[in-house]
Length: 94
Image 1 (cartoon, helix red, strand yellow):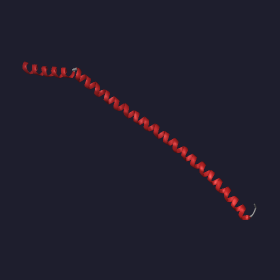
Image 2: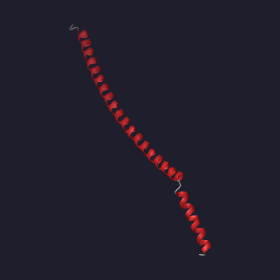
Image 3: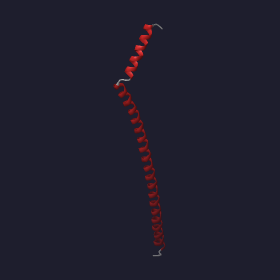
Image 4: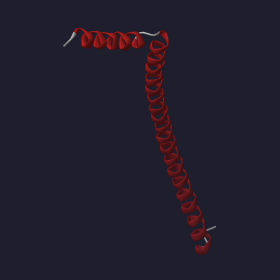
């Protein structure tokens, strides 16, 4: 490597270092890093919200199933009483 080649290489390396250390370049890198973190935080928040919504939906569905079961039980009891009364009327007991 001659002195001129070395000098050209050193000048290129120095230019690259200077460009890398410019305030605008540092700010851009910081902004990109913040954007990555923001995206990750948004994804975490979205997953958390989806988990909460799924949990609330499961609870709601369970409560709905309980209400339907209670309603069926009441309906069966009511139907049974009506059927008993109907048979009593048919048999002439009342």
